[in-house]
Each structure stands twice: as C-alpha cells, then as structure tokens.
Image (cartoon, rainbow, N blue to C red; front, side, top):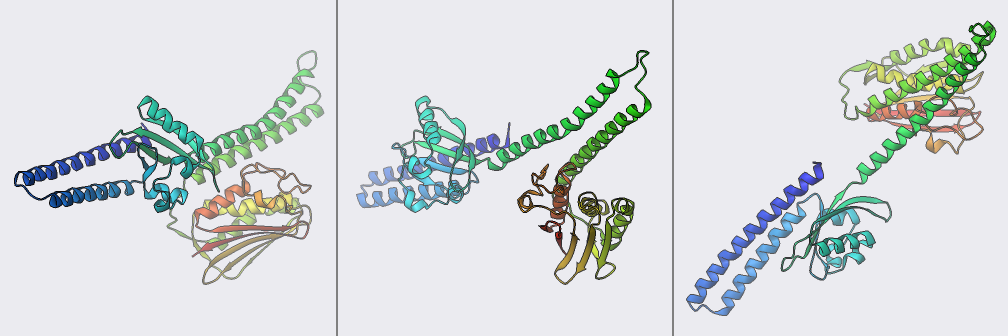
Length: 399
C-alpha cells in the first residue's frame, strides 16, 4: 500500500468524522429549534439559528479542506466547482474567487479529467486515473473522483502531484538505457577480438603467431579498461546521489588535496605533453569536505585536460579564498568545447557531436560526477570555452 493510498484513506476517514460531527451539531441545533417551536418562539430566531449552523458548517469544512496537502475540488450536482482548496489553486495558479461556480472543463481544460468524472458518476464508485495537465509546464497528477451524492456536494476530486515521481521514473529508465548502450560497445569489441583469435587458431589448436595474438589481446585489454572505467563511474555517481543530505563535519586543507592529486597525475601529464600549474592565494585553505570526494573533483578535471586537451596544453589550477567563499578554477588552452555542446556537458553520458574531441571519449559521466559533488558541498560550477584558446571550469564554495 503506497503513501498516497494511505494518506487518501486517512483523509477520507477524517472527512467522514468531520461530517459526523457536523451532523451531530446540526441535530443539536435542530433539537434546539424543536424546543423553541414548543415554546412558540418567533420564526426570526429560528432562521438566525439555522444560518448560524450553516456558517459554522461551511467554516469548518473550509478549514479541513484547506489544511490538506492534496488538491481538493468539490463539485455540485451540475458539476460546478463550489470548493477549491489552497493546494490545487497554488499548483495551477487559480483565482478561487473568480472560478467559484465554473465547470471543471473551463478550469482545467482537460478532457481526461472530464472522462474520469463521468466514469465515476456512471458507475457510482471512486475511480483513480493518472492524468497529465499541459500548460507552461507539464504536471503529472494522480486524480481520484469520488461520488458523494450529498445535498450540496456531489463529487469530490482529490489531486496528488506525481510529477517528480514520473520524472524520476523516466530518468531511471533513461539511465539504464544509457548504461546498457555504453556497455554494449566494449563488450561487442571484446567478443569480436576473442572470436577472431579463436577463428584463426592453428590446426593443432594453438593461437595465431605471437604478434597477432598480442595485437588482439592488447585491444581486448583496452576495452576491458574502458568497461572498468564506466562501471567505476556509475558506482561513484550512484554513491554520490545517495548522499544528497550529507553534512561535512571535518575541515581539510584543500591546497594539500589539490597538490597531491596533481602530483599523482604528473606522470600522465608528462606522457601527454601537458603542463600543470597550481596557483593559490594562501595556504592553508580550509573547507568542510571529505578528502576522497574532493579529490574526485580535482582528478576528473585534471584528467580531462590531460587526455582531451591535446599535446602542448597548459593547465592552470587556480585556488582563491575571499570573505564570501572559496573559488577553484581549472583553465587550459587545449582543444576546448564547442559552443553547441556547452549547455549539455554536465548531463550523464553526454558525448560531443561537434568536431572537437574534448567530450567524445570516456564514460560521459566525469563532469556529471563533478557537478554532483560540488552541489553536495552547496557550491556551484560554471563552464566556458573558446576552443583552442581557453576553456574554464569555475567552482564556488561557501565558507
């Protein structure tokens, strides 16, 4: 039983209890009226008493409905809205005063909602349907239509906003599809290399000559390493996303963390003819973080410059601290990122379609991981690029 079903049952139970209380109140006042009749009281006093009961009844109902987190709309027997609570008016930016007495088709302009109401009334039973409402943005709602058949209230509509759940489900499916696609390529290559070796076996069953065997085994190893990087990045991203509410309690000197990361990658930098300069305004620069997580930011961005910047690239890692926060920048003069790619570089599995190779290789998760870690620290990250001139990633962390 999901959360929405439980909350709906609780609401209906609460609603029924309120109705029973209101009936008891009404009966009490009716008894009083009867008493007044027996005493030959005048009609004006009875009328005032009935009006008082009605006002209290409506006031209590309004309080109950407006206190609900779910959207509530009550319809009369002409299917006109006579009660619209705060939740639904805020969700659709409705003016309740102007829309009182209007039909739902004019309020929500949704044919599926009208069919739900008709189906509920024709079967005289509560029915739920998932409906998408279109406007400035798509809103996914789970809507319950419940026939009340009361004197003033004919149908109750309960709206539960499922937009976030639908979006999460879509992203999950997209993520699984992307991972499957990215894994298929190296696995297909590995399969092809192994099959080639087996098909070219010598008559006695041994493998082809050592040169051919080494060639294909080296290619297989490269694809295995590619697959390993992908799996590692997926696990890292999953781990980071599950720690959205983490609180960093320990301060680290990030000058030391950055220096250690650069030192550990210096061999790769030299091998690819990339020069790294680390510029910092002071030492120490303290930040509440986790050493392993912060190292991932530095390593990912330094490795991007090493592997994708091109030979002769100069990478400058610039760390500054001021009264408002800490600014960490990575700036290089390598191949860069095309302007058509910039809006999408932090998306998972994004690969460049332009002529620039900066984003064409790798798992496509590195920059997404960086962005998630920065946001985990409550920081922001921005990117800019003039291909062949300057590419910059700038992160800001609040102290």
